Length: 257
Ligand code: MF3
Ligand code: CO
Image (tube, rainbow, N blue to C red; front, side, top):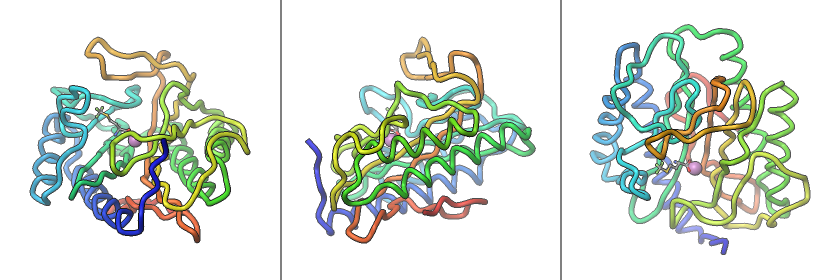
């Protein structure tokens, strides 16, 4: 069942979303060579709680940390730990926050210092894929319009979308209907209507689509060891077009429609 939200509820999700964006920027300011992902998680946890939020991932289906941190070939759900960030890494920070009973979800892949040209192109394509997906998040379109726009942009660039992981409705719960796949056919799937709030999140790789789950039951890496990138926004379908509820703050490049 798809839960459409009232204007009042969308403002609550936007308030959670603003804190998500600030948390991502805060973690970004702490990312540096030799910092561990555990230290980044602790920084996020303290920042979120200082602002009266609750990290939604913590305890979700038993997830042990405040946020997900996914370096290099880790696509999503990397568990913060002893890993030390290094120059040249791609590091995805994925943050869900519950504030005043409402939830927003966003992710951003940071480059650590100098990265190679192909890694930079992967980041650019993933951000463009998110933007083109958001542009399709309009009343009267269908979920497949978002999915197809993302897939086409990514595959035309020579990269792959991960198919076994999808975006989702979000707001009252972390994961609501509908699924938002990053591949599909235009004009197919659930129709988008006013008040829907969805997390659009292209997860892309420089190699193939296949991913594997690690022994910890969470960490999802590319099967071929290729680099991955992941950008996500929580978006409301409004009468006058998509509204990003997790707009970037304090980052080098923002994703706008
Ligand atoms: N934030 C993730 C998403 O984009 C969900 C993480 S669930 C967790 O949907 F338990 F791994 F944190
Ligand atoms: Co999400």
